[in-house]
Image (cartoon, rainbow, N blue to C red; front, side):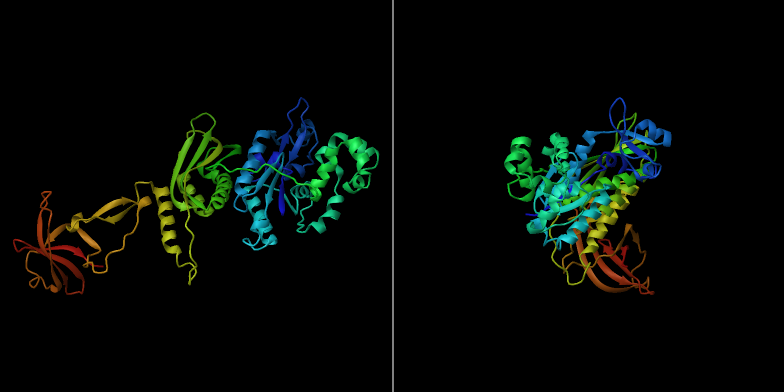
Length: 473
């Protein structure tokens, strides 16, 4: 087995900062009667504010610093969101609170092109999510987690290479060592190697067997069963904004973080979203719900582009303090065969995505398409259809010619085609229909050409009168 650990040392700050740009100095405060700084962003650190400093001292250094009260529930929710997103890499995922997500990746390495390429994809994905993490890989889950928490972003693929790296780690990283850490330090035990150098029986009697068992699990000498993360049936993500926002377009940066999470969830399920709801949560008003109807997709840029068009149309009743994204409907995405010419299959997909963007900008009812209708009468042989559900049916190979432009009403010619200097190219095609609904017609249709070479669709009715009904492109 091969485990990759994602450790987030700044998770208390990331749950607040990932929706912003990080330019404003911000810290997370502990919830106590004498609060201190739990985490600080880069702008705050440049002012000398670091973790462990009291909030009073931090305010003395920068009176305008943004202070967030630590939210452990939000941190737990963030770990679940990361696990949900990581389902695109592997289905074997475990969460280790308070700040570690573990991925078993041995089965997916070939698919993603090997370990270096997979780790590069994970790093890039975490940056897109707005999280700063340390990624470490080892043959055991516990070893990968310990290496990451020690700040060692390394990849160890073979058990033979693990021992020297593992035993050099501080013993303080072990959960079972923390209650007796002062005693261990007092007898000179600072690393796992120092502890392993002591007699095992004596360590077990004095410090408990759990300490040795934890080391053995990290070394792969004992099994290490872990509860696996089970993804929900649909995506539900929420992001608190650093400060309330009054303009809809300013929400797009934060919304994209959620769309990246959604794309990872969909990738893991081999699906695309067809109905997506974006709720804008206000300070003193009911949430504004934006519903997007999409052709099944998980492309981040396309979803963001459609959402951008909809946000540009919204008039907010109040400032927005959070964004919620919910995948109301998803559908499997069919696999695609290889193409001889790259991109040959994309034209239809790009057309559907263009329609979705136009509908988002102009409104759902502003964009329609034409569809064939089973009626021989030309003026009744088509229908408007919702562009979101449109499908193009191919015409039969032996279908008669029809003009691209059909006049709203047939225009009387007044004379016969020869007198109007029209030359008949083909016809007649007789159409007699509509007796059942009171719209009966009896016409002989011809294709004619005028003096300039333009082609017209003509017909002669039962009374012998000639009409122009359409123009060929």
